Image 1: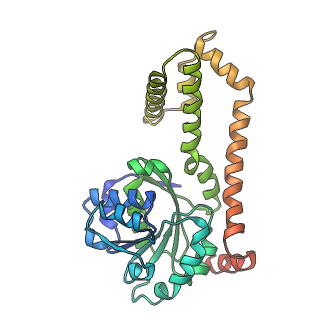
Image 2: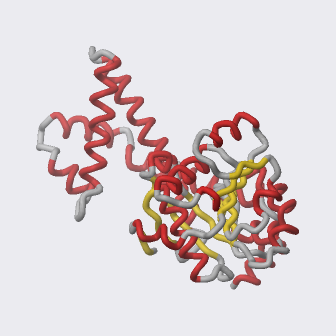
Image 3: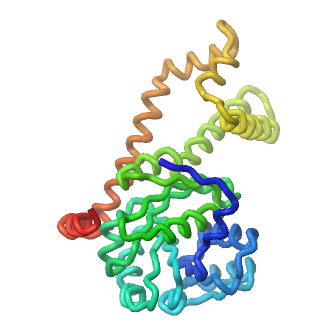
Length: 299
């Protein structure tokens, strides 16, 4: 796994980027692109929803389409920002346009669970990059893992990395199979922290704090803890030990957590998320025989 955090990556952006789907993640990436000084005339977005197109128009002066094929015509990169269950029909319809381009574009999918073999099958074999971002990308504080098929050129890898760097930190994976674990750890991960914060707020209110004070204390504590954990050289286990005095209040709380099987519960939950990511490929992707065929082609 390799990491990239350098703003200089923006210099490698594709000359023309088309987004299929204009929802929250697409808007986060578009906002990052515009904030970085990207040429708005190089950006295109298509979405069937009039309300979504109206929201997109408020972001900047890039081209907005209702028709997907019109949006991708001539684009160097096509970002698939649609729900997984919609991806097969959309990409199959776009395959003739993708394969007819004078310069072969690459497809970057941020749809959870849909594997590269399915994307290659539906797209007619154009180069494919899979990305798993997470919702903090909306604040440009996301963590995104990427995997590229062998057909992706070094220049296209750099372009995909630069594009996703608009949403935060990027990491390259050597094995596509690791994306299921990434989905469990970071893709779905924000919800785990949100749920813990919910429970802590409820418990604080039950102990007598006002909802407003409970929320402020819990969310600021979460923010501060995350900042400490992301400091250079920080280790969450060491940080936990440093604030846990024997026989103290923190020790009492942690002992109660562990008595309920806290660590095994977290492992079980993340295993369930990873398993669901894997089963999405079977449910929504191409049949296993077609998947094996494309995986052989890309080996």
